[in-house]
Image 1: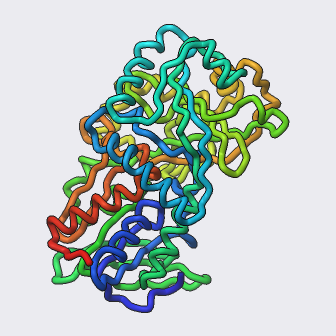
Image 2: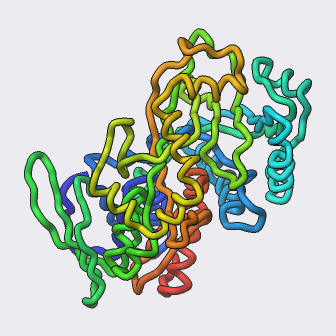
Length: 419
């Protein structure tokens, strides 16, 4: 992973996260003789969302039947687990319960059960408080959905395995590279990049026949390079989750995954408790609006990005509808006691001393001009550039499936030929 050996290649994939690496791997393996180069602005691959997550293999229960997200989670989860078994990567079948703590949550729980059945989530069962106490003796709830086959994995290790697969078939990964411009007006796509490697900085022009962008937290900026008119149509908004780690002595409070019933818009960012494959038990509160795209710390603030967000018409419309709730989430994010009260709804035995500070993750949500989020896969083609503008909340689970869908689009619309 150094300065590229060539400045002309067949395909450039911008973004060295799990989605970009899955796509690059798919194209290098499936299209005859294609030279594939991945560009990553950080010093190494897999540094953002692909590294900072809970590791859950999603089933599609939180997504509307018939949507891409539902198919992606269902089919993608099977592909991913099989890949892990082939590569001897850890997969832990820990099971999951989605718990209703109060009567007013029962209608949403029933809707989720309906979604899960229609989406083909395996082993789905609606259970009462007595059965819940048998599965999770320390969890409080009046009713729950039980999913015994839900698993957890290590997405960072999976993404690095994708990178190994890519390199094994001749692909190249270049780090310390930021894309400054992307021009499609010439016969080849021209990327002007800034490189910062071992204290040396320089610009490099890379020419490619095709470009696919999977820029995560910065994807909208890449979209605007080829479609400047879309600056008022699409904005990536960051939401941070600050994970706590349960004190090791209390690890036996939970056996598997525990999720709260989400709010009415089926937000994927509600409270959940996750036994990670590395042995830690993570407690995740509801996600809160972050003040920087890479705002992993509570004190991370980027004034320029905040001004751009505040000036976006879609954010203004979103704030009118959700500003109060967003402010409450931000307050809780800065208040450990508020988080503890949320957790105690489901684990009454928890105390403040049981919660140790953990890592944080920032999820990129694509906000549209009308003030709503893109809640499904959003892929746009501009000539021979394909932008993966939004991925569903189950993106890591669905990474292999998403890669196959991008490859099918390229085969269909760009007339690429598979092996």
